[in-house]
Amino acid sequence: MRPVGSKYLLEQPLGRGATGTVWRARQRETAGAEAAVPGQPGETVAIKVLKEELANDPDIVMRFLRERSVLLRLTHPNIVRTRDLVVEGDLLALVMDLIDGPDLHRYLRENGPFTPVAAALLTAQVADALAASHADGVVHRDLKPANVLLKTDADGQMHPMLTDFGIARLADSPGLTRAHEFVGTPSYVAPESAEGRPQTSAVDVYGAGILLYELVTGRPPFAGGTALEVLHRHLTEEPRRPTTVPEPLWTVIERCLSKEPGERPGAESLARALRTVAAGVGVHSTPAQADAAFGVAALLTPDPSPAPVPPTPGAADPTQVLPGNAGSFDPNAATSMMRGTGGPAGAADPTSVLPHTGAAGAAGAADPTSVLPHTGAGAADPTAVMPPVPPRPDGSPQPGPGDPHPWQSQLQAARDRNEQTQVQYLDPSQDPLRRRPQRQPQQPQQQQYAPQQHQQQSYQQPHQPQPYQPQQPPPQQPQQPPQQRPQPRRQRPQPQPQQPQQQQYAPQPYAPPQQPQAPQQPQQPQRREPRPPRQRSANPTRIPGLGCLKGCLVSLLMLVVAGWLVWELTPLQDWVAQGKGYWHAIGDGISAVSDWISEIGASSGSGGGGGGGQ
Ligand SMILES: Nc1ncnc2c1ncn2[C@@H]1O[C@H](COP(=O)(O)OP(=O)(O)OP(=O)(O)O)[C@@H](O)[C@H]1O
Image: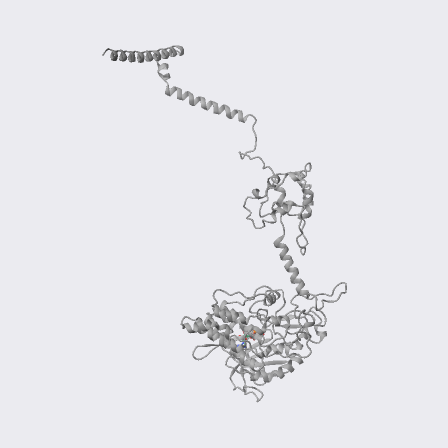
């Protein structure tokens, strides 16, 4: 157990964030008069021990002491009370009330989303805490589920307790820039913070909107992908209403997430609106309550005098780097933070830190509001989520205020690449998805072409054996290698009018591959190659005269059958039994037939004469 000052004893770590580690601790003796809460010996508290790099920075220590009064006076039923601040040697610690409950991030992960009513009521209490702190001129700037602890009171009710107030104010000290770090949490950063614009208490309302969205859906609206992508979505994307969110609640979320800070409600009106919504969307709501909920937009009034985030002396001006930023630079901007930009930005990201890449230290102070690395020497660049921009080889200056910023250019390049992928024309004869490659009997002449063809042609060759015969090269063949060569990745697709077969396919990029193409493409049959003759036998060995032998056998079989029929169906058997010769039997047969005919004639003549006599 490690002592903190003379009054506290660290017992067990509760968790670790980007700015420090929180410990369960015990009070050894009553704190002095400088503490907001003296406490009693034996009492359990929570102590956040700030990271050594913060504690070693004189700027931060000074700020820590200056903020003491602000931190210690913040008292509200939904704010974790800061009881004491300890500065001792290389140790900087905040002594807080211990909250015996999970934080909201963990709770969400373990229990899933809240119902709309519960989410609205919980966020209303968070908004109460924000309203109180804003009234006191304190902006949290790092509102996220991990900073909301859930305290269960005696009657089993859960209350959200907002913590980490003031940490943002410490973290965005110019001292941090010396540590080559920025602060921010991508999924919860307000657009103005990400852009380095001036910030007010409206950033907390934006954070409350994200939190509310996450409570009802289980995830923040702009999450997934890299930190850069998440930030870009905050700036450009409108959130979509999930089907599970009732319309009045969505009205509130949408207003909180306005890109324009002035259109967001004040924290106080937000709390009121959320309670109205909770009353009106529940199963026991009266018609009047439901009507009030549907009219919630009228309650969402902006804060007439939002608390400004005070500037930090010595910070750089991001407006020098970010085009269109005419306002004054506020170095106290966001507290957010990510570790690097390569990995996906998760909702649970701690208040992490982006490494600086430019010579920010030389500038004296960078923009702590920035979630992005610096791009140039000297000026802090809040837009730089992208890797640093190296000095130009030709020595030309870095982009000026009117130029697109490097990360914008890189985004555009990424878009271009995607665009190219989407519209790239592809000759169906080369499309491996449309035509499966077949094994081809050895065609020595193809080998002459193989080294010259692009890999895609390996799918084409089996289906077009003839064009590769050296004696008869197809007329279009010389044109194909240029179009089949891999295009440079950043190059936009070029129209190729001299290749009619590509144009044919351009209007039908989404045609199902199995659809017959011939009717729409009259030239297609010309390109189709004759199929190899089918082999009826699995044994391809040919026996000379085998066809003739087969004919003989069939004829023989027919003769046998015919003989058998004659034997069975004619009096031949009798004749043979009587020992008659062939001609004799024929003569007998003829005489038998003539007798039979004359008999018939006689009987018909006598019958007719008898009739005439009567
Ligand atoms: N007063 C407290 N009582 C009990 N537990 C606490 C208290 N304050 C913080 N914790 C716990 O300590 C853990 C770390 O807190 P911390 O504020 O350092 O983390 P974080 O908010 O995730 O990170 P950061 O704020 O640096 O981005 C949290 O998971 C939280 O549950």
